[in-house]
Image 1 (cartoon, one colour):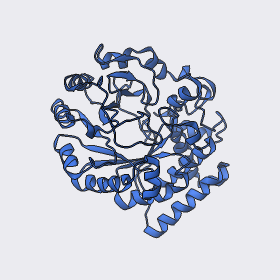
Image 2 (cartoon, helix red, strand yellow):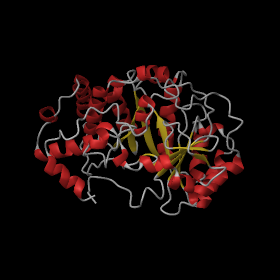
Image 3 (cartoon, rainbow, N blue to C red):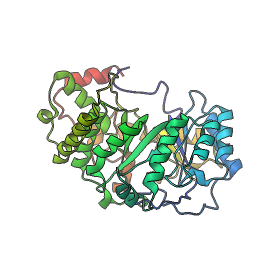
Image 4 (cartoon, helix red, strand yellow):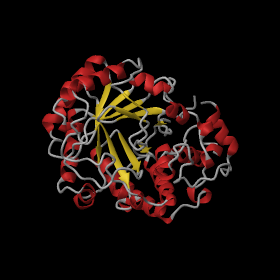
Length: 398
């Protein structure tokens, strides 16, 4: 296995690496991009405690190594049985994380309970480097302060923390300043979410494909100082491979890529933060983020128990109250198609990077109605990468 390409040590057709459960659609925020279109009240048809425990039992029956199970929402803190469910999952031996919202429920008491009940990690969303920017995106005053305070409390309590930032036209130029906050407060990983137009997320909120490419190169530069990855930005794994080859050859990025001007603006902002803070590059080898994709190592369960390839691809393939999640994951025709890159269409089907990328299947579906269509927001032309031998060497020992 390549030291550069991170792959799970088991067959993703048999068990997912990550399972996300939308515990509720109740949330006290009203974010511009909300996939769940969250509202303050609970869904009366959501899984009750006994049904939620059934879900946890089904996750346990995948066997070992166990999938990572993430309680998301809405806001999982709006579920009164959250801590009972965390305790039950811990008794089953599950690896669990919680993804709460930046509201008054994100307090020390709840964070300590999360850890005491067995969760190991937490993710929080920060979409601006200032209260004005973040709160405008989340549409609730005070969310920035609550999020950053919760972030620091989680770190002090000993929870591993992933910080998520959704890239939109509202915060594109602010990314270096968010990077500064990540280095100020510390996080296990910074994950940039690339918007999929579903739920409240709209196409007009997105940045252009060339700007996405620029952001991925900026993120690669950031990864020299922090752990970084993407969500629904699968072609970042291509960028990591390309940039690593360039670094090994001593070739500057400008000589190999014609990047959007926003890249140079972002890189200048990054260099300023690095200089001001005296940051030293990490010695650790930078690797591609783990190759999981919708229905391929990844599965999403709605608040009602419906099973989807991802939260951004609303194609239902079953319900955990009617059939075991294990059987649904392994047998659903859509999932098997999503795990078969030879079925991908357009440029994705022709691309030499398809085995480590595959494009955002969710964005393909959102924008074309076909989950196997080419990734609409990737600018790469298959076969155009000049260093074919070097790439083959990195891809060949996976």
